[in-house]
Length: 457
Image 1: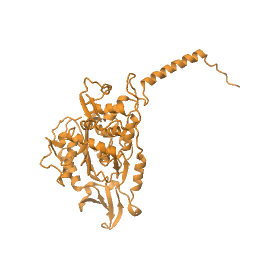
Image 2: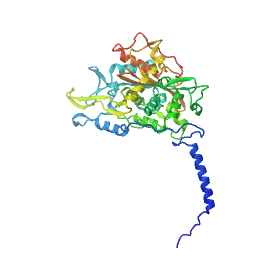
Image 3: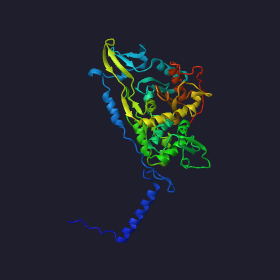
Image 4: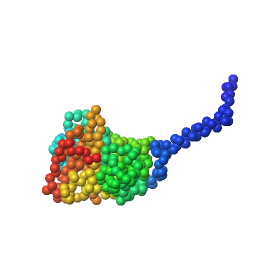
């Protein structure tokens, strides 16, 4: 039996339905831009154009390739026993930290004994409640120091590897990289803005010649951590996909090969909110990173865009060093940026320590604390943890600026009472490192911060 036929709508009703659907579709098109981001219908801003980006290694392939390449020598059946590696059980042998395992295997760590001790002493000296100091050699990926503390917080194990906290304004390094990669902004380009020190709204994205009197170049804005400047530049020159692609190249959202499991850093760039995208570009939301990862980001920029795989174990031997069962050579992890772009970003970071948020920590009067130029980036943000507010203070740095020997990431997480900022920890560690070769101004003693010192950003 045939199904009963249904008469189609009369022509007039079809026309009326089509007209209504077309009108609704037009309204939606006006209110939503091509990326799906709400945008004012009266905006005279042209639709952003996708930048030309040179193809680079895909993150997952790069990580997998490094993991496959890191193998024991001579196909020996030995792998690093991650659970057994313990810094506190290592002893100095021939200026190297060596840990002897229960089975007699001698594991040589990449840690610099003096720098490791300095990092631990700094956390104790400044009474850090929860914090991390990591130092990396940019050209090799060797971990020179990795010290952490989480007093009275047993749930925070391996703080250096956790990616639960906000990346804050350190994410402006990623945004700066995206802006320069796009070719639409040059280091010397400037913008005039006002406000935005503690929050960002749609109002901040609109130019106001009457009040926009704070004018800064890209380097100055990075140094002062100018939130509105980065929000407007991203809003005007980038699309969410551009910023996400740059974060992906720095391996946000990817696992990092390491002795221990590292929390996956995240860069969740909004695609359906104009304000959300601008806020993420300024580091207000969407980005979470482990201290180890941020040290690698800083090291990659200092190493002409090449991110090296982090290395903690250099070799392992038995029979009093006669038999080598494991040996590791430096491995390239990924090319996060083209060398020319990375070098531009590296030059911009000098503004932080010479005239920006880090000036008071790296300068005393008109005299620098170190005899080398230091590049860096600060970051400060609060976050809710178990019904309590915690304050995050970041500082990443590398030096010397032109040919970096060391990259540092320091993070302090504390309550309302502060004992120290991340910038002080990073500075003091760099001072210790360069003092060995006479490149630290030793007569300038570091001054402890008083409790309650307000955040810089």
